[in-house]
Image: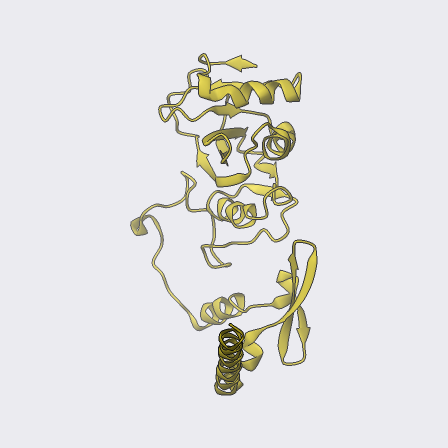
Length: 254
């Protein structure tokens, strides 16, 4: 393990990671917030994160944050790897009560990195946000689409070369043709999200801890909302009535 500064005592996990990965080169970065921070090549990222989550002593179970930085205009790079963009993973260990930060350097012409949605399903939206804002592609992501901006947006707003002021853009004009294109782009298509159409509605398959549950889309009942509310109220009243009857029986038995 190479180091830009001597790791502090709370960076023990980085030493454990270095031993687990063997000959993989790691670069320790000293941070003002004192969170142990390490740089690793993207080809070893998945193995490193898997170790930290699954195999480490008192592992880092929680993906606390996943973000990126456009580093192209950074002037202070002493002891840091050459990086046009940096992807940052912030993990939390409940057993250790401490954090660890993992960084990956990317070059502008090769903005690709493996998805970690197989390790943390919650990374799905984080990775979509990073792609939306920076244009970094996460290989293996199940549905890498925009999450903050409309699908017709051009560019990635947190890149340093993206216009930051309205005065840097041309005048906005919403023609009838552009309006129709925007409305068409905003349409929800269930097939794009792994759902199946069922007559006038949508059937969604939820995967919950190995169990499969079929859930009807509530939108198919949009014209029968009043009836559904009444049905739910009747169901609720029935459950309350059953509970009261049981309580009464318990009192009688006592």
